[in-house]
Figure 1 (cartoon, rainbow, N blue to C red):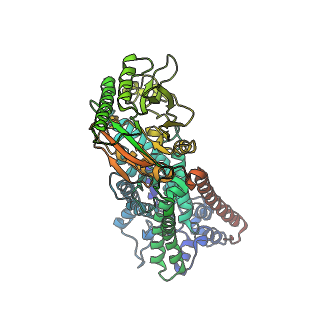
Figure 2: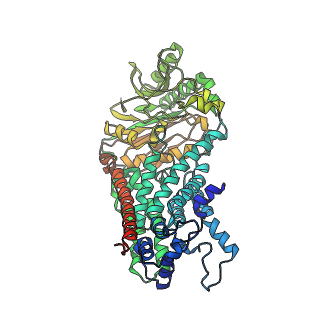
Figure 3: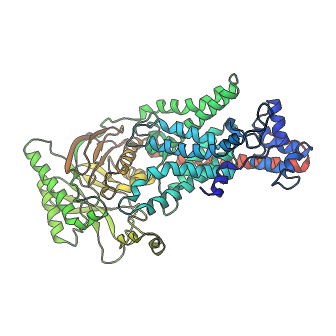
Length: 608
């Protein structure tokens, strides 16, 4: 860790001010006095020592204290370096060193704890504790310290969470992606530090967390929503909130519970008999109560009858990027497994499905330009005798490639298509190709970029509306919601995870699919080339799933539903409300600081 990052992570000892000493002696100063009253005290002449401290221009220490809380006591019981100990003796060098490095270490540990809460581990309940630990690092810190601590938290969280991105291409893309996303989390940490001195700060801080996730879901290069708090809660108590306000509300509840947990413990420790401790506890109880109240929104009742659906996992010759070199073998595997399913139906071993879904890239050979691929698919579809959705790559004579799902009828042949709308940067398209080539020659594996589709795809399959959400798209709120709003009674998430081997990526994505099932109250079918394929009911439970790298077929009766949840109807509105709350928190911080600085110039106490 460089010295600049260490300083940014909150390692610079805050300069003690006379106002801070006065507050410690009185023991009654409130939050407003801490941030603003310090400036007013300095203006009346009691803050001269702070104003003339080393590193501050004479007469400016009060403004520094009001603007960056440099003159306030160290938060959370960790003494600032150079602060006299309780018995009046100078703090020991060892204690100063511990205070200097405690928060950066705890920030990394908090990130690792949040990672541990994600699938395949069913430890969703660790997430609030991870955020409580993060809150202990950020509470009362300056903006740049919040950025540094947030960045370290992001590294501790995302480096292990995204290690699967190094499969087959080495560590450079993984480290670059994790670092970039951690920098964005650093901005979130900066925002949380800014609002952490406001009254009811856990509310503002949780809204800032959602704002950070909203930023990561949109920028850069179209965004990367992977790692949202919501996506680790598929087995959690808060899950029903997804049906009420989507992933933003679910993330907000987890963040509020975590920040509220820290605040409740902090206030209770300092003022065990104060009403404030009880009020802080409400920030923990409120999201839990809301989740329990939202449980009636979760239902798997068959509103529009049922359908028997089948998903095919044909398997691939080998894992990694090189599986694409055997595209015909992948196609043949899925065709053979479909024919085998047809034989099982004839023998009475499984019920006949109403429709079948193949995975993404199950036919990387364009059947519209390659007659042999067309024949293989057509024979398999005719054998099963029901509509089949085929994942293919279309290769037009000019322009970008298309990652396309094809609706194939046993009588009419191909009848409808859906082009994937969310194209994965540095996977299906290569931004800044010449620049990225400096760091990795693997950039040339993507020889021709894919282009995005425009419209949601809902296939009419044996009387059922089956919405296509291809692989990476499941991470994006708008892609899934627009498919349901277009009439999907069932959501299909055809995916190709063979590139990432046996990594945790598959289980992280499967958890996303479970969240989407509850969010929109739809059955979700997940056919994957190499696994894990699954059938998920609208309440988020997995009723069937396959093993990795095993040819298999799942056949299940699923409920058809058309009712829209509040999350489906409201769309991005809950997120916009939470963004407005975050903006209001920042506005309040700015207003308080302007007041404090004006009070310094006027020489009068600042109003709270």
